[in-house]
Image (cartoon, rainbow, N blue to C red; front, side, top):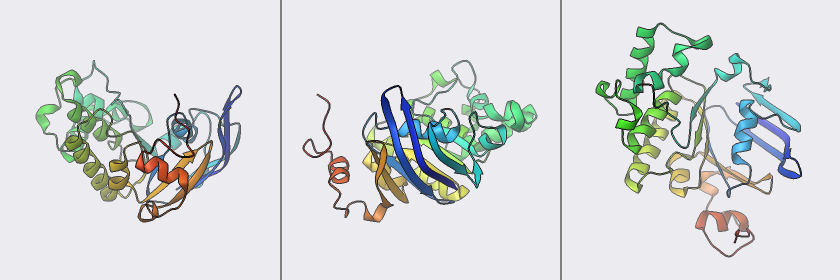
Amino acid sequence: MISIEGLHKAFGSNAVLRGVNLAVGRGESIVIIGGSGTGKSVLLKCILGLVRPDRGRITVDGAPATVPASDAMLAHFGMLFQGGALFDSLPVWQNVAFRLLRGSLKRPKDEARAIAIEKLRRVGLGATVADLFPAELSGGMQKRVGLARAIAADPQIIFIDEPTAGLDPIMAGVINELIREIVVEMGATAMTITHDMSSVRAIADSVAMLHDGVIRWSGPIAELDMTPDPYVQQFIHGRAEGPIAAIR
């Protein structure tokens, strides 16, 4: 579904991506791990057409990615943002139906509201939440609303940025399980960025580690703990000592 070949991106003298190669199969849930500042978010932005790579090739469902991305290309994607990124001035249902109320995916208002309520139900929130505002919701509920918005247009690809950031361990487990259920149910391709190894083990079919601008290691989740790669082992076990230098 997603193919990345020889992707490079620098900002001035800072070379962030230095030849990324990655293939993501249709219906696969891949998690990208790596330290802060290693280029994980830049990689997603390149795929989404928000950042223009210096060189390399990205295809999505066989079509070359463009900058800016076309409406047809963006229709493939749903996005769960790290901080929720809900619009404070809009009620919950309009947040969920945001894409369905404008642009090429526009639906009649009543239909968009009905879809929003159904997606809220799918993430475990009742219809009574629809007319509340984000400030009236807990952090876990806001994350569920963000997930409902990500799947509102039934995308083929879902990008997920730090799904459990700011959540307590119990709610984090609930969100991880919910993401996994929805991705499998929809048959969607999912690409997740996270530092949370609990999320990695709950969500991933496969894992790729981005380090020093390249994919250091990739493989099935079942092989993650067995790889002898010292960079992967240091990261997944949170060890202070190892080849990855801590920033002091």
